[in-house]
Amino acid sequence: MALRLEIKVVPCSGKLHFALDKQQRLKCYLKAAPQDGQANYELIKFIAKSCGVTQADVDIVAGLISRNKVLLITTCLSYEQFLHKVGLEKQVEIF
Figure 1: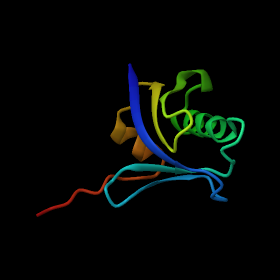
Figure 2: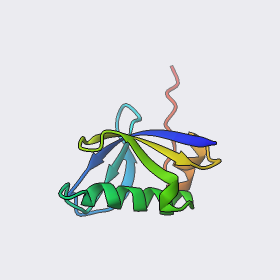
Figure 3: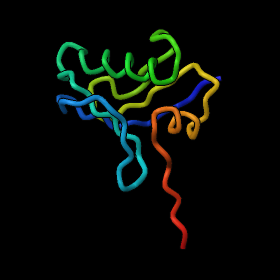
């Protein structure tokens, strides 16, 4: 089973963490610069550690040279479980 994540990456942010923006889209702040694949490597390493999987289980399937990326993670986690694991909770709007 695989988890597909659409994520916006913010390189050179000086911190390493996940956040949800106002539209509830996943953002990942990275310390590494987007040079020579450093930011992509840090993203894969951070996602793997956060999910409890190996780095080989994390693939960037779209957006290799873009800030908007699509990742495919070989894991049993759902999106909600992933958010919980990284300390985020999806906000539900009540009308």
